[in-house]
Length: 121
Length: 106
Image 1: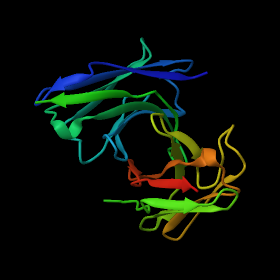
Image 2: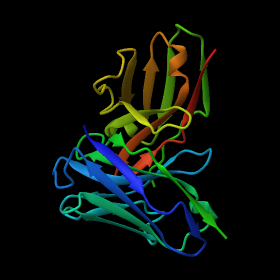
Image 3: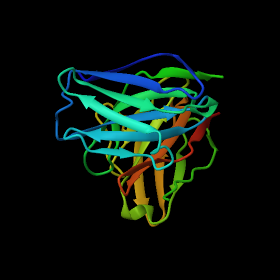
Image 4: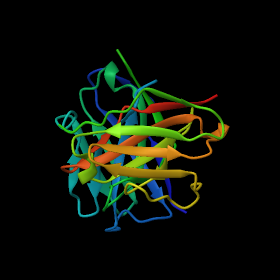
């Protein structure tokens, strides 16, 4: 059974770079059937897609975050990672990693448990 | 940019049918999907590709998508269905979520 687990610092200082890693078990990052994605949810707010990576390395980012986001994968460790630069309090959120279908509705069919990242001034 | 709009809240009596709309420009030309999120939990996919149910999702959940509106329908709503529901679509290689609808079962 596929499992995704986010890891990384729970507290980041304003203007610094947020870094998170998602470890995938029970499935392969190299599968051509899926993208691998980051989604976040600010406290009490809705879901926001951050970006996705495909097994060949292609990346797709939310236009509103594109200038600050990098997503990259490490197939040898079956992990993919998120870097978000120049963070502010508005980036405080629960960050989820997920598996995304490569067709149809490009839905997110598996989610990690999420990790809360707080940006402190 | 492509946007999806949902009502902030919908109320339904137990055993009745709940309908949650999601609107977007020519949404019917794309595929829509839906997630259920309960407090403190990760979202769960309940409908994908407009009207398909993942394994383990009860038959009372169904979906449709036409014109500018996708709709999640819950037939015979149960207390356990009280949650936030989000629609989502993929447009020009960009993921877009609706703002979410809180379903209250009362």
